[in-house]
Picture (tube, each protein chain N blue to C red):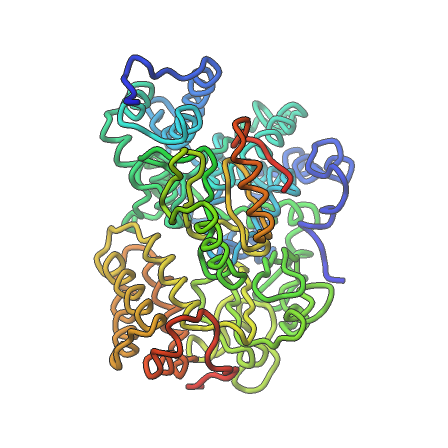
Length: 448
Length: 177
């Protein structure tokens, strides 16, 4: 059994309520921090823990916090990014639904460390019923004296509010999220200035993912040094992985970072292997933006070494033969999957979600969707594959925010490893036009 | 029927809630409540945002109507045209496609005699195809009203059409399907 920090009590009946959560040691971290530690002490523990942002980028949380402009006389804000919308990712939803108090506790600790008196949770609009779950947890915590004015006599005043979005993937990008939280369209801002200097209402702001902030609770309970002993190398601690696709046991799992990918995929403690009677064809390891890998290259790197579920091991080989841990949205595909079809549906997603601000993304995502559509449905031209590669290259790096990269990478990677499938579609239009299923049973990369 | 400014007024409970929401933000930043207030408006005024409703929201938040229109037209959850009381919002992104949502959308279209983005003549059902809903492990799925209906099958679609087509269907309630 792996370490369980966030999901330890997930199956305890009533854990979503304050009394049960409290009976399992809940809010002890808040008591410890507010009674015996200064805000700087809390930040120091987070730095020592080696915690990295769990939303996808993997940036060290303690370092991000240290950028916050504390000299400014303006109010400081902590904003929680609960706009989980990366395809394949549903871990934050699970945590907020099943164990909201560990998340609220982490928010209180983080607000204390950063000096945020008004902390906002920006949650994706579709999670309508979770707003009620969170507001109930906040009210319970407040009634028990863990939120509000002068919490536990520490002098700290903290309020937490929930604000819902309305269906826009782009609002997961932190500056678009801040625009949206100000009641505007979710158009990302130019950086610099970074939110740490000028964020919400032009004030110093830290934006962190749900899981990142929830992880502060066990970090304060056990101490940053102990937390850092979990995991492997610079991938410390535990991570929630949401697993979906053609698996026997899809769901949300907490793993020790560094768990062998083979064990995660095949053991009955986790995904339980590819569905019966089928074989692994490909994996998107960390949400739809990260490069797809053929099964073989996912299980073992180019030197034949088994990969681990860690930031470093999954990115081993760069974008030529590696991928990224990303958000932990794990999508497994069996041999029935048509990579062209899958890539087209993802391209459609990015086209739909482009905010329209930067031309390379606004136009390029639409072109990619159109070209992929015609290949998939038997109208592809011989030059289309190179055209896609060219469009992807011209979007990447040429936009204000990373949505452009996120749209370009899946297309580029699918062609890199499965080019023969695209070619087959172009060469055999009559065979592909009426089927969404795979036409070639390829398990190996054609280029690596 | 065309809504006019005079007929549009939130319930007292909603008006109270909006006043409370405005206090969550610093002085002069009440516009931050715009997205949540538009959700309330959509819930209360037949599932969509007409121009008079948006003007009303602008007046409540003390902002100009164009500030509301530009937001309402940006976010995909706001309906700018009338929709059916039961609106299927099928997730059509990669992971749901791996689990057969496309066949299920076609099945629902055939069953209701409408296509995606259309509403049945009796105003009961609308079908929409939306992008990733964060329900990939329980695909295929659709959101209907407040809740998610997951691990959908043709049998479940039949049942939803039967139950949600009844006059007492409440889109804010969770049904066991």
